[in-house]
Length: 417
Image (cartoon, rainbow, N blue to C red; front, side):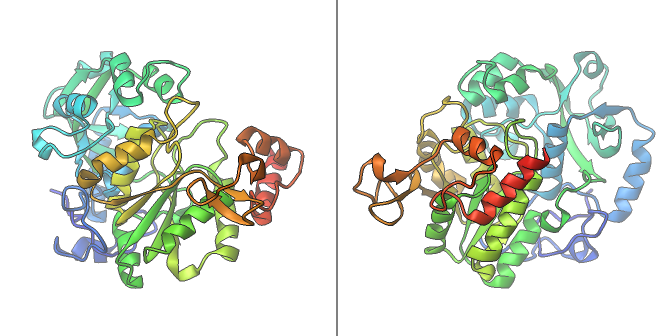
């Protein structure tokens, strides 16, 4: 039985990452901030400090299953309630249902869930596991983090999984390549987490219970979530501030788990967000916190996943941009928006779909195709490749494209590397 309650009240975290006494002592009826979590309650799998000490000792006596960094991110998401209503890694029935229907199986009431959350394992190791057996889960460095009670072992059809999740089995797709490289066996069962991964950006690492507490403290009844794995340029800023016109607050929620090698490193991005917030955003109407998940690049399905997770963090609205979670032209520019809008009643948040934004020299302002009557020759538009070239050469992109403070951060980071 978990002591950490499954209905997230406001709380702070101890230095060790475990729930504070205030969190552990509050009952399931604690305040949740705006919006209800997916499935109706936050399902946290992080043990109280007392139980964590016992579990850590027991883990030393058990066989350990190694987890890569992406699986460790999933474990953290399960621990803090970001994957509510999941209690652990998916059973075969839930896994198959997610692939085929984007819904969990009967055990979870058939609720919407677009991406498989699996625990890959070497088939030679997995076949020796027995139902009901407790095993320890270890990180890439061998440190132990959780106990898992085995409730099933199954084989995945990795090619079929890739086709279902990404809409392609082409290994040039980064998400497909990661999936095809994984072991085919998967171990299912609930987890009890006694040690979170060593946190990067600890001052910004807020759990869903904690973001909800901030929203409630600030009196935010409506909150728009913004997912990003990139620096915030003027187009993003414009979209976020449009959202702020209709909601009480904005959660800027950059993903800091694994990304592609050519994506801007998380530390650089976080610095760029800090300088942007310092000069251009109303402090009491925005919150910067990190999203510990790994990036899948699954386009439409991942957009739905991002929306559900931000619902668990307390968001009532979710910004869906052009080619959300897309990569390399594998998805249409508005496929993600179409799917999120289609599933919005089941997701339970209000989608805020935006066209591609740009600065128009004729309008003299930021705009989109919905608001600007002028041709592309009047738009300040730079490709990601061109921007990277400019930054590597120490050139600042036009202020209509990027705030100079952000550009300086990126230029300095490129010089250091």
